[in-house]
Image 1 (cartoon, rainbow, N blue to C red):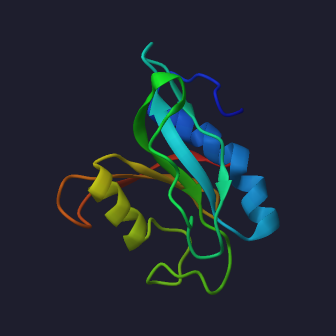
Image 2 (tube, rainbow, N blue to C red; image 1 turned 60 degrees about the vertical axis):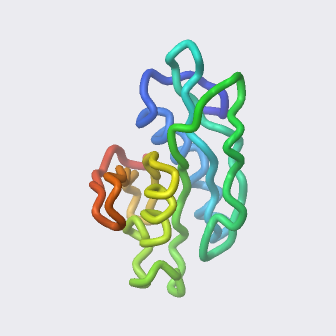
Amino acid sequence: MAPGDLYPTADKAAVAAIRDIFPRTAASGNEWGGRVYRLPNGKYSYTERKEGNKKNMGELPSLICPGGGTNEGMYHTHPNVPTYSNGTGNPNIVSGGDQDWAEKEHVPIYVGTPNRNVLKYTPNGKPFDGQVTIIGKIK
């Protein structure tokens, strides 16, 4: 698992990315993340990860993807900190801010949570009304 490795779907690339960065989140207590992208050959990968802070990703990852790729979403982790600021204090959900971002960009957002789930929020054009599914586990 490394940025630039190829996967058959965006979901598989996102799960690999989150498994790759989860130890960094556990060690630092900060969010980490990047982009999932589709290459012209139809394969998917993920960008280099960047460190945010305890509350958010900070600066969003660039929309410019390697190899002429197109943005297919953002992946990131939620740290297990008691002051997590997503409106509920619960880091094991897709936050309202995450949903808002996905709706604005019209692509999914993937979240690795402290309870070791990989969640996918798929926007549907209506704010905070998209679908959340568990697409993997962090091993």
